[in-house]
Image (cartoon, rainbow, N blue to C red; front, side, top):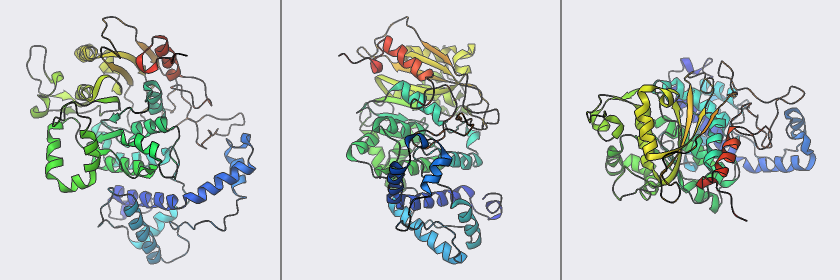
Length: 485
């Protein structure tokens, strides 16, 4: 679409493609009952061994009688360009009404009739509403990177890295979770997968799943990615979202938003009120009482504003003098610990150097003063390609607490290094193949990435997450204690 139309259309590429994806998701959502009929048909005619073979599964789907299905409207089916634009514009209005808080009432499609016609033809045969949202995630990552998100050192976290963190931290029923640099909200979304026991479907959330959704939060300072994340959360079915457009590090400025910005309040007010209830002290936005935090904060660029720096212990030298600038990811380490209640646990993606550079020893000492270091997992250099070759690690900690994590001076730490990143040197995913060299599908019909971070619902060998779980159970780590018989 970009090559054929968008580069010369004179429009904001992100905004217009975002609108098209939003509209097409709504069109697919509107045909959710047809998807249920197809699933039922497959259950009746397809043997279990056929369901992880794409070509065989496709042949079964082609036998479905579709005469009673809803006709998809996001299609260029021979109508005039102006007729098609009216149809798409009407769908956009319905989608905005169904999923509030992403676009304003006055937003319209800015593409010309002819440009829109070409874009619809390009997109109409692509199925977006996949239950793990990976296709949409990659589309948005491309769009956001075109808007220079990489200049801020923030990249969408690969889903298999997210799943490893979720498995290792083991979110439980009733616990509160937050991502303070949420991007497209991969960590919150996959936390919901863990808590609800299923991936996204086109169906509405039930009461129990909605309660889980109310306890999961995301914050990001980039307005475009917040809108992406809110879209992914809204289409999950809960109808509302705790994804907030805020600068995590500049928390003293939050008051300006919720007291003086009516537009912000109308969009984010309900989610922020739920966040307020988790503050350690009423009226103070510094400390919170979250059970779990998972984040991949920006790891490039420095914070130079003294107004922000003076609120952080890591902004001062050992002699008490203030630093002129501090790496953004360093401040996120301290800020994230503020969000955790005693005994709370965190997984954070960091540049490898923070964990082994001699000059960063003061950071490691600060972390160990606040929390028990549980694990360090070295990720492959290809993990965040093609956007950056930066070597990264995942750090897992648990905040000291007299009951859940009593302070000790000496303790074991789990270390692991990934030898299969799931991507090649170009940053393209590597997928597991069957014996016949065809891509293997999991029980949801998804391709399986070839990595060693965790097993894939029994479809692949145990990985780093399973080794950590065994280690944590052996040591009786609080959130992995074995239940007594």
